[in-house]
Image (cartoon, rainbow, N blue to C red; front, side):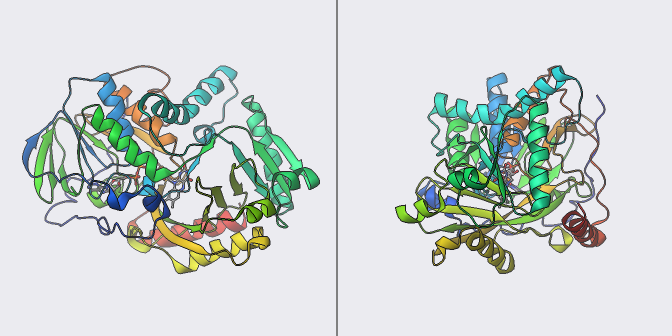
Length: 453
Ligand SMILES: Cc1cc2nc3c(=O)[nH]c(=O)nc-3n(C[C@H](O)[C@H](O)[C@H](O)COP(=O)(O)OP(=O)(O)OC[C@H]3O[C@@H](n4cnc5c(N)ncnc54)[C@H](O)[C@@H]3O)c2cc1C
């Protein structure tokens, strides 16, 4: 199998690579609060010199799912997961809570119904795996399998919504197109011109899911070290991994740091970090809920290129994100909030639902995710010894990261099946241009996407 080398050996030399912002727990993230993160035990950091069979860097869903699946396939291996802050600190504990089961078929173009069906099953694996963890390990993450509701804000988007319905049909997935009164019975907004009720997919509390996954992998025997920022990775037959307070050697490395990968010298010219922002309202009263409908509590999103997405939380708030997203020059990361974008989110919320005017916004936060130029994520292995496994480019990854953990374990085991042969495995990721010019490329690309796409 062909593999790429997406890292530079010289990048780390003599530099302090501590990623910025990793210790800022006290950002105003509603999910962290609802998962009671402030009162949870954060594990001790790695200190001193150690050896392991497998080291996983990154305690988001990719790292945690990889830990779970590797444990399942290799019960005898000593697996150590290193997380710079706390598990769920990255995008996995900050996101919009959408679990769109069909993410992995979005860019699939294929005439063969059998291949389509196989890809659909793989795409649904992520959501099914979360459900499996709920049933087998009592994971509490407020999962509600209510499906999705896509809405159109103008005529062009109405057509796009119809096209999306037709695309789902190609995969034998039925959805219901709504106009006028029928739409009004589902949701009441003066801005929504049409809607598509998609009866699959789920909403959940992302930080609870990450923290619960940490518990599950620890119960299965994986050693999780938090507050352990990896400062240098020296790849080889045996990798040397340095943290701020310790070091560890292992023949297998799993790189599960998505938007942070470039800080460690990986994927620098293949993916770019994108900052996304969220708000959460105060809890709505029953009369406020009645005024907007939305009794079926789906994940709600519009069809703009820079779309908004909203979910009703388990304790009665609206959590909303999107409306815009931004690239910061030199691949800078964000973990705080951006007043310009959060203002746009609020404007969208009250223009969707003017009946909620006056509702307080209690929380605003942000996070970073990554994009590839073709908006397709990638999973695979690389390095001279083919012993660095990775998952990157996960712009929307709540279910896909779970699948990537399964694929990584399968690749490690040398499996030859639909997962390990999936089209995202070891694919050639398009070049994104030099870092110094990237902000111009990204801005131009976003302008084209918004105005001409
Ligand atoms: C605001 C926002 C909203 C989103 N909304 C959705 C959504 O609704 N639905 C959806 O499907 N997707 C959404 N996404 C994307 C989704 O959250 C990500 O695709 C997914 O969480 C990526 O998981 P991950 O484990 O690969 O990376 P992360 O969750 O980012 O985990 C990487 C971890 O690595 C750690 N780390 C980084 N560098 C180091 C280091 N040097 N040493 C040690 N540890 C390190 C970080 O602390 C972090 O915990 C959203 C993303 C954001 C930011």
